[in-house]
Amino acid sequence: MSRHIAVIGGGITGLTVAHRLLSSSERSGLSVTLIEAAPRLGGNILTERRDGFVVDGGPDSFVVAKPHATALCKELGLGSHLITTTEKNRRVYMLRQGKLHSLPEGLVLTIPTKFLPFATTPIFSWRAKVRMGLDLVLPRRPSTQGDESIGSFVRRRLGQEAVDVLADPLLGGIYAGDIEKLGIRSTFPQLAELEDKRGSLIRGALAARRKATRGAPPPSPFHSLEGGMGELVDALETSIRKAGGSIIVGAPIVSVSPSSERSAGQWDVRFRQSAGAEESLRVDGVVMTTPAYVAASICEPFDTELGDMLRGIPYLSTATVALAYARSAVPHPLDAVGVIIPKDERRRLLAVTFVSSKWRGRAPEGSVLVRMFVGGHRDPSRLASTDEELVSVGREELALLVGVRAEPLFARVFRYERANAQPLVGHAEHVRRIRQRAERHSGLWFAGAAFDGVGIPDCVRQANDAAQIVLRSHI
Image (cartoon, rainbow, N blue to C red; front, top):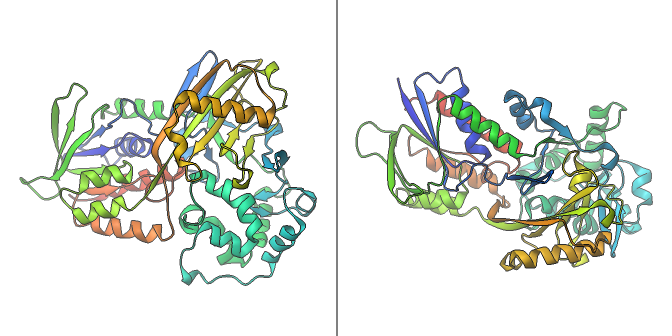
């Protein structure tokens, strides 16, 4: 039986869904059309290459602990392109009272696992250190009480200073979000599981660390690709086209509606081509991988309640400012991954990455590349600034942090408007209700950063799962 599936959205989730459908041994008779509104594929993943520099505008890596992205890279022939962070520069700086301090060795997602580095760090007060140590004796919160915010969770286990100094810039920074609203079980479920299973974050982290390293130095927690994360997008596109899939870019969706003809489960998909003309497809199933608010606009005409539920997942905007310099113009050794910046430092940056120190091959010999992050929950009005104003902010803040005052070799601003999904407290239950509502519409599925994890490995995992559901469905 022949079937035609439309994948709406050409970010990492949509590309992986299409690839997985077309590469499956179960794909007999199945054709796939991927439709992307933007003029390019990749969504938040964007790599530019110029004058020997490799500049990732969005994510520059993915976590190794979640194996799905690494496995996909190897499957696509990119295994030899995988790189890890430069070993000698794996420290992270934190800005405290205007000065850069190394985060203490053994700190795992806000949890101290080595006594001496933690005891001697100037980042925390002695009161805070004692309070964080109380995690070892505090009673656990029953998991039956459900989700809670990151802020509430860390405050309860480790104290207020851990919230302000670590959780907000480190955990909240990944989402550019408000840790008093983000749900711990949808953002960092591994932390909640440590309490559930061990009763103490410190005991759980120590046990996990001993099991993982067995006395060896801890490996890099991140993978990237030699040519930037755009290599993954390019490889997925090549795989889809080689397998006979159709990819249409620059084609915003006009409507998706259940077909009024033929059997249940068929859908009419209308989209606008770059020239302005509308085209339509009749398909046997639709996999939505767009941001939730885009999916909401598409679904509202045939299911208002589903649209309202999708629109209930909020988003935030951020921008990345990339600056390149001659190495001789930067007085700081840049001997770290970068800098995280707590809110009480009152700076205009969320964080800084020393890209050319973090990864090999990102800048030519004698040059450096730096990325800075602005906007998000902490400073939403910053996105109203022009590119020139954002570059000025980046240069001024970088001068204060590492003393560079020279003219950059080049500057590039990447804007991510409403690109950061915010999994609030109760997010998992909200997503469960969305999926339950979607079951009323045969042949309609959802996957992506809005639903079950925002990182690249989580999106790949969701795409794999969605593809298996499609392949095993009988529509």
